[in-house]
Amino acid sequence: MSRFREELWQVVAGVYDQILVHPFLTGLTDGSLPREAFRHYVVQEAHFLPDYARAQAAVAARAPDAASVRRFSAQAARTVEVEHGLVAELLAAFGLDEADARKTPAGPTTVGYSSYLVRSCALGAFPEALGALVPCYWIYARVGERLLERSSPDPLYAWWIETYGGADYQETSAEVLDLLDGLAISPDERERLLERAVMTARYEWLFWDAAWRREGWPCG
Image 1 (cartoon, one colour):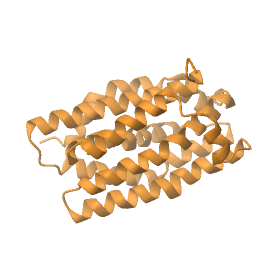
Image 2 (image 1 turned 135 degrees about the horizontal axis):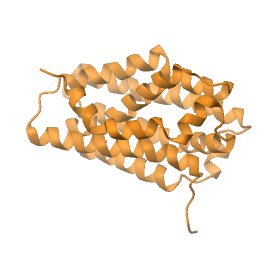
Image 3 (image 1 turned 180 degrees about the vertical axis):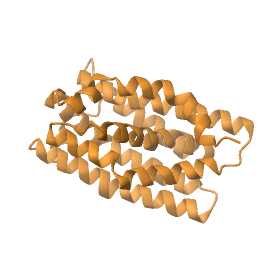
Image 4 (image 1 turned 30 degrees about the vertical axis):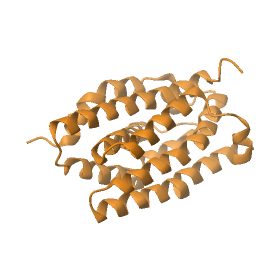
C-alpha cells in the first residue's frame, strides 16, 4: 500500500515542476537573479513568516495527540527563531532591519497566502490544517535539495540554498511527512486535505513569482 505522501505529491507535482523552472529559482542557482528581486522576496518573507508560525501553532492546537502538539509547537518556535532569524540576517545583507522591511507593505500575494494559510489552519479540522501546511515544508525541502546539487556562485543565494537543502530542514520536513502517512481519515477529509495542499502549492509558486515581478499594489 502506497504512503499518503505519494498520493499528495501526485496532486502537487505539476506545480513543483513549474517552480523548478521559474526564473527566480534558476536565477538563484546560476547567480543571475537580480538582487532587487531577492530583496523583494526577503522583505515579503519578513511579513509572511509570523503568520506561518501562527498557522503552525494553530495546527498544534488541533493536533489529536500529545506528540503532534509538541511537534508543531516546537516547529512554530523554530520558525520564529531559525527561519525568521535567517530573514533578519538576509535583511541585514541589504542594509535593512525588520522595521525597514515593515515600511514596505505586504504585497497582494503575501496577504493572500498568509490569510489562506492561517484561515485553513485555524478554522479547519486537523487533516485540512495539515494539508495546508505540508507543501510549505515539502516544496521548500525538495527545492533546497535540488538547488543544493548546483548551489550558486552568489554567496548570498548559496546561503539561502544551503539552509533549505541542509540536513536540519530535510529532517523537519520528514517529520511532517511521517505524520501525514500515519493519518486515519475519511474520504471527505482526504479530499479536503488534498484541496488545501494544491492551493498552498500554488501559493508557493506565486510567492516566488511575485518576487520576480517585484509585485506591488496596483492602486493606493
